[in-house]
Length: 147
Length: 341
Image (cartoon, rainbow over all chains, first blue to last red; front, side):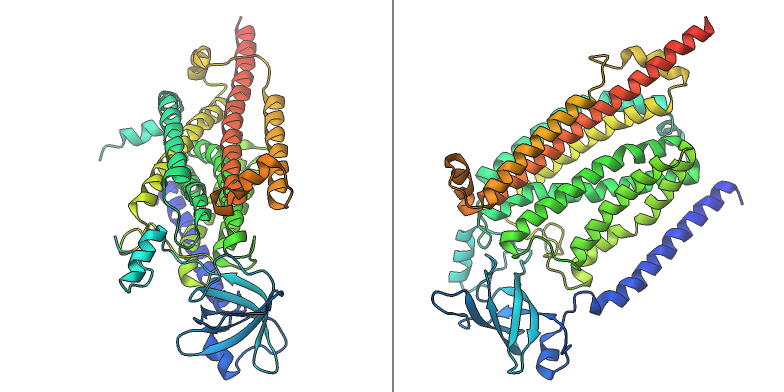
């Protein structure tokens, strides 16, 4: 075996080894990295009681209630099957609207209402001009442009 | 198989001449592409149905993020080739590319953060997989540069840093799939998906033009810096002494101070404008700019301004490095002639 071939194999093995280590490490992080709890688990009571965690879902249409003159807002998050009530006092991101995917960070109180200290809006990968979105909505399509 | 072309790529004089011939073309086409792409992105492309004009940040953010990753790929592969085949030019390519990639990683992180504030509702989300993996990319670039500079023997420094660069390649697929494997605030891929780009041609065309322009400009920056690296590494070689007269040089003094001055001035101006933007002062011109872009003017213009600063910094820095290396090689050549005489 030539020294060059030795270096080629050795270096390739190092890269593969690190990749495997990274994959194992990433897999271990998978659940805990964001302290993220799925909505079914929240409903079933499987969530950390003593610490903050994140929940995510769609803002239920018609559920957003604002108190006049205050920042307080109340809405429901759903994953089409389960839903959780959320209360939040703060400035909402510009992408927050009914039907939008959002992530709330906070904890569940004794009444089963999620008290959020942070609300973040998630954007999807679709881009289109407003006129196109309107036209699609009129035809009964949801926002999903096809080329 | 005939490997002559491959061996030619490993020959410093060939690479030096090749880069010199490509440089003016890459610079001209790159600046034209960026100009057209940005003009169309800012003023011609339609607004987005959800993000309104705030989405226009992508015409800087996406090219910056693309170059950050493409450049790391180049650093990693060049380092791999340099380690396995003992090809000196590979180390020179990696060393020339790393600072450019690091600067565009900073730009990608900064513009993403500026977009995230109005859209997501946060500047930065710790623990988010996409954000974290790109931050690690920045640390890899910095680690590469620091490691290379911190070893006294240049050859050992090259090899140690190259090993780090090759290992760091593992991070690239993690960045790409971070939005698929984990629950990330960052949206999934728009351009490369199974059913084509999820973006209409009116937005896609300026983005692709901007991408092409930034890529060509990256080529120019790399060609410049690579010439500088080769001059610095080969100053004892005869081929370089023969060519030193051909290397353009405008003055005998170092441009470091001027460069630093321009960069500091731009940064102070940007910081001032940025602060004025983000806090509600009622200054005539600033509030007009702030109210533009459907109220997202502060965020959009700040992003474009940062892109401008990074491009200017890169061009000054590249010119500076070439100048320093050339001066040093000239001094060596003069001493050499004196000794020979």
